[in-house]
Length: 462
Image (cartoon, rainbow, N blue to C red; front, top):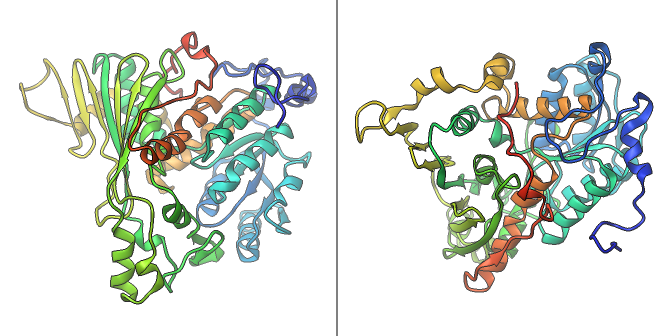
C-alpha cells in the first residue's frame, strides 16, 4: 500500500471523514476518547444502530444473541462461508422479530459487499484471525465503525495498516476486548484512578486456559478452515491450532494486557517500550493426541512449534514492568492470574484478595468481596442486572453495549485503534524475540508521539 511521508495511505481524502458526518451534520473528533460530536436530541440519539456481522460461528453467534437483546439494534446483513452458520444466524434474527438479514456466503471475501451497504452503521467481525484486519480495513474505508474480535491483527504490518486507515478515514476501530469489562477488572480500574494502590510499578497476568479439547475435531484433526460441530449450526474453531503448529510466542496476549494497559496509561502518558519473550518445550498437544487417539495418530508425532508455556516481559517508558503468560496446552483450571502491584497495595486475582497498606491487619490479605462495597464500578452497578447470563459473566454484554453506544453517539470508543494495535502487536513481537533467543524487541509507537500529551483514559463511564 502506497503511503505518504507521514505513513498514511495515499489517496485518502476528506470525503472519507465526511462519511461519518452524513445527513446529521456530525463531525467526529478522531482519537479523543469520550469526546462526543455535536449534541443531538434524545430521540435522535436513540436511533437504531444498524449492524452487519461477519463470521457467525461459535463466537459470532454469541455476539448475535447478545446484540439481539441490547436494544435499538438492527441486524441487516450477515456474512459467513458456512451455510449452516449463516442460515442459523438469519433464523435467530427472525425469531426475535426482526427482518431476515441479507446473507453473504459466496466466499471468504464476500464481506467486501456487505460493508458497502447503505443500511449499515457498523461491522462486527468474529472470523478466523487472518481476516480480522481485512474486514476492519474494508469497514473503515466504507465509513463503517469496526468492532473486531481479538486479536485485531497478527503482524506488525497489519497493526500499522489499521492505524493508518483509521487516521486517514476518521473512522474508529474497536477491538472487542471483553476482559477490560470484567467486574473485578473495572473495580481495580476504579481503585487505580482513585490512587488506592498508589503508583503502579508492576503488573502480571496470563491467558491460562486448557484449550486442548477445543484444538481438534472428533478425529483429532484441524485445518485453516475446519470447525468442530456444536449445537445450533455454529462451531468451535480449529484454525487456531494451525498457529500452534507454525509459530512460537505469546499467541493470545490481549486478554491479560488490556486491563493492565488501561491501569498503566499506555498510549496516554505512557507506552510499551520493549519486550523479551521465551517459551518452554512443546509437549502438551502431542501428549493429548496420544492419550485420546493413540501413538500412531499423525498429530501425535507432528512437530508443534508453540511451547507449552510462554513468558513475555514488557518494560514501559515510565519504568513499570509487566509479565504476561500464555498457556493453553497444559492441564489446568482457567486462570487469568492478575496481579496489580502499587506503592500502596496489591491486588491478586488468583487469591481473590487485596492488601492496602494501613488498612486492616498488617501483613494479612483482605477479602476482595468487601471491596466491592467501596469500589464497585458505576458501569457494572448500572448494567449488572441486564448483563446477567451473558458470556464471560456479563462482560460480553458490557463490551457490545459500549461499542453500540460509540456508534450511536459518533464518539471514539474507550478502547481505540491505538489500543487495538499496541495490544495485538505483542504477538508478532514475541515471535520475533523467541526466534532470536529472547532478544529484546522495541515496540512501534503507533501514536507517533501523541501518547506524550494524550490524557489518561478516564474511569470508564456508566
